[in-house]
Length: 265
Image 1 (cartoon, rainbow, N blue to C red):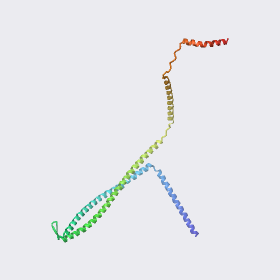
Image 2: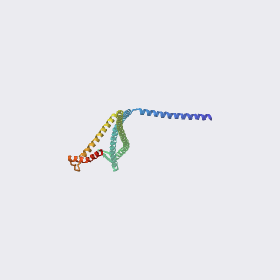
Image 3: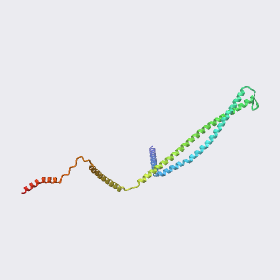
Image 4: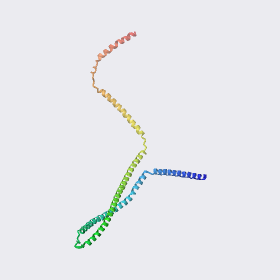
């Protein structure tokens, strides 16, 4: 009993190890595939996509040939069915004519200048009717075949149109992706250039400072000019006579001089 338990335990352990190993292998394989895929250039993948689209051409051409062949055969079958239907219509009219003649009770009948007994007409009518039923069943079967082939041809055309539309859309998608890739490459190329624009920035700052100083000077000049251009509101003071100015000066200064002299005696 213990031996069986040990064997079962070992088997379970081995199975768990195998399952775990398979899981690790699967995970590692997935990571390898993802790594390889990420390392393949986008340009290469786009070329591969174009190649896959081009590989659709043989299948499309093969289906085109099949559809063309089926169109020919369906057209031929349509003609045969139309001819059979036309013959059935004529045979039906002939059968009804012979039946009406027999129903008239006559014993002799004349067709195309020849005379036939009622028994002969009845025998011919029976034969015609049996053949009619066989031809009618055959024509009905051909009509079913024709309908099925027409439906199949229509489905094939629709499938081919869908395939052609999908191919054209894939071509447009690839062209769009190529254009986007080109824009990315142009942007990457532009960002790869390194320029030292510090000197340019300093020069721009100097030019800006000079412009500011000139603008300040212009404003000051404009203020002075505006003041000079003001309209005088008061009358200008009249020029004083020089004699009066001298007399006024000395009349004001003389007492001060005399006071200074007396103080120093």
